[in-house]
Image 1 (tube, rainbow over the protein chains, first blue to last red):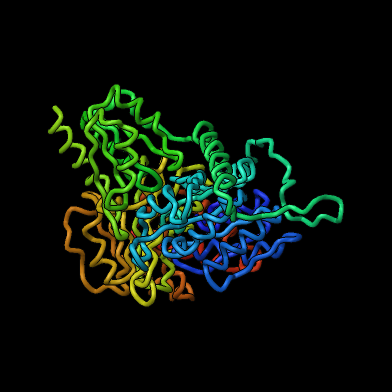
Image 2: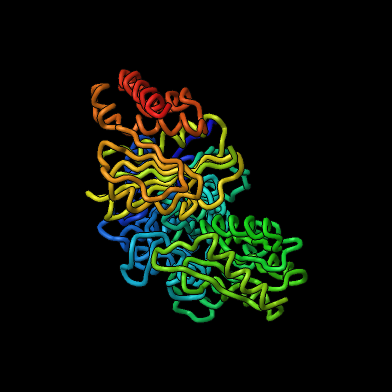
Length: 354
Length: 180
């Protein structure tokens, strides 16, 4: 298939449809509106496809709960404050072990915040705003091609583990245009959805989708089962990209569009003879701990760069296990760090560790 | 050409977003690395609209252009006020002389004054002022071929609006002539 020039939000929608998404439920919020708009135009053209603009984000995520429970590939999307409203539903979906893909094109917060790009939903995405012992994969694409690839992958991963998957992009990913190509996914072998509530036709016992378990022993058993699944995800699904880290004195850790800005900073620093590198987490949960541990043997310092006041830096510190000094540089509220600012911070650190 | 970073700015309706998209599309057709990033938000309603386009031989890093634009195309006065400072030394600044009375303040740039609206009106449609500016820009930098922009236009317009292609082509050519 030839390359197409698409806006991020539309490319994400197109990727979902390519991946077999039949249902989309959502509620408008900037800067992700082109995604539901695209789905409202395209899904009705597909046999059995439907788009519903729900009355709220809470309604939309519970429609996902229903459609996923019936075994359908479905998706919802929102932006930061809207994602906050969806957290209860995400906890239920994780508890009931249902596959669903949820897209967050995030903006500045807290509260209603602003509409410009931000990465202040790292905690919300990786720690979960909902209750209980649950986890879900979080993909953080840095380009539209990667967004397309990861959205398609997300549907397979969600089905494979029977777990919700979040795709987290900031407003820039949603609004920018880049060439994209739709490639077939690598084709995981997926289990049959024999748990779905598709009607018994009086031929089998009813399937029940539920997250309530009043017997503590049974609930603990369920929690342990979920934990085993999360361990599997941690073992199999971590992804990251190393950029010039082999001989780097300072390794920048950055994800999403911030990683693209940091890449420019690394290139500029290298031209000045300063050995900078970057480790870019592609999955935020599970976090690429091994990639951090690897560079602790060769680097002198780590620098987490985020469009937040410092969230991922906590995971960097945890993975670093106290071996290297961990620094932070962030802009927030919709302000975007420049390559110069990041380079200056690296120089400041180098000055300190020499 | 290693990398061109272009800021295009004007007020809503001057076609700065589509001018940027056409350049991006043309770059993609020539297998170059491209990105298009719009300003989005309340300032779009009645105020200035702008987009950042990168056309590069290598992978596009940050899609954001801060103070490192290699060229800026400004269609109205607020855009000149806002972006004149963001062009790198020796870069290009293309000013729509039809709507901007003041001259550029910088002396370390290549500055071009183009009567985009007058030329567009001579062609018969003030809406192609953006294509006049784009034509001038392409003549200067040659980062993509004019034919690629025409090809992109055909894809964006579709068969129903293909009759608009000649007018846009003329605007690109007149823009190129204006700075020769």
